[in-house]
Length: 298
Image (cartoon, rainbow, N blue to C red; front, side, top):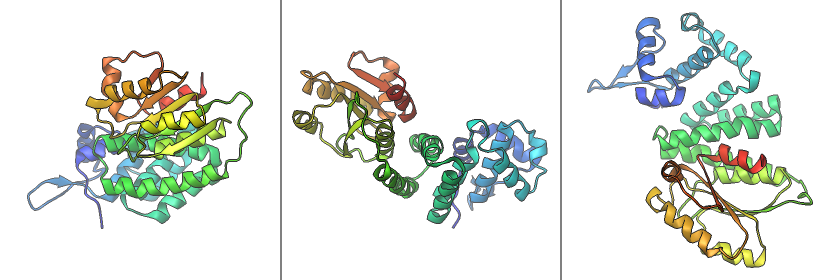
């Protein structure tokens, strides 16, 4: 069964402005909307797939007039040829997106396994899946994907990350720090946290992973048993933006007697990032990619 997309959905998914999509429809017949019984325009999976390929090739410098003359097979081959060059993985990420929207576990697994085969395990997870996770967060924040889409693909990604973490046997460095990773109470979106756990382990750091839905009181309890240097957490849906500042103050104050740095990112910190937040022990980031860069490029 085909999904139905608005032109705003296509804009978010492809990066092509709605105005441009309409021009392409009129001038080049790239895609054509269907209409509901009440005359509301909508698009289907085949339209999304084609627009993703077209947007990729145009971004690569091809003229839209040339791209639209290609057959679907020629377009697909050209996307595969150009993808992966200069660190660009749009074709692979688009394949993962389509598998997500079609709820196709086999297609998702095949697309990801192809990435591993083509680029190696670390690059597939770090670059391809890392960028996909970042884009997934944007799609979630803009209501472009549904809860069922997010749950479907999240479980598949978590399975991959669990396997990778279990297989990563790197002894901590001599001067390694200890990082405590957790998600606040009622926060269940742990893909980003699992990804950071893998990155920290792969970089030879000690990790204490508490996972989702963890009351902040547990942090002090853990510290008394195993002292840690850094706290890492992601606020995707909880605590709500209006409560974030108080929440952070409470967490920091509960561990005020210890030399700990705190690192927070996610959708709910965006507002206080704009307003400004001053605490020398707290670092705030827009997303996982920015936080990862800080952790490994000090």
